[in-house]
Image: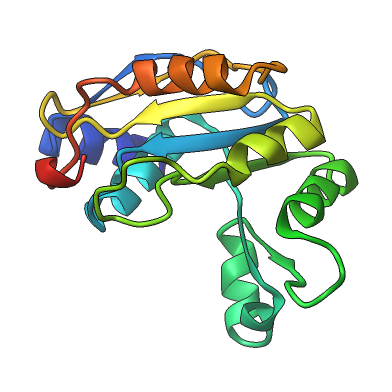
Length: 182
C-alpha cells in the first residue's frame, strides 16, 4: 500500500515531503507529533498519506466511551488509545502515563484544537511531551507550496516562551487549505 500512497501523494496530488523523509518506526519510538495549520478536513488524508510514506505509525487519544464495540476495534486499528476523562487524573497525566505504559507511542495532534483561526495554541501537547520526556516532531500542512515539512525531534526545555517561539517560527508563513484560518 505504500506505493499507492506515494502515487496519490506525489503524482496525483503533486505534494512533496521536506526534511525528515526517512523518519521511521525504528528511529523514534515515542513522540508528540504536532501538525499545523489545521484548517480543513483535507488535512486528515494528507496526514494519512504522509504517515504511510514515511513509515511512521501515529496514535491519537479519545475518551474511553468511544472505544466500545464495534467502533473501539476500528479506532484502535487506526492507532487510537482510550483515556478515562472522569478519573481523578488530568489529561496531561493520563496521556503521559500512556507513553510510559507503551513501548511505542507517537501521539499526533493539532495544537490549535480547532480548524478555525486561533491566536494561541493550546499547551497540552507541550506539557505532555515534557512530562513523558519525549520529543516534539513538527509537521507543516502547507497547501500553498503543496509540501509537508517534517522537523527533527525537538525536546522541550525549561523555557516555555523560547520553546513556543521556536515552534511558532517553524510554522511561520505556512498556509493551510483555508489560508485565512492559518
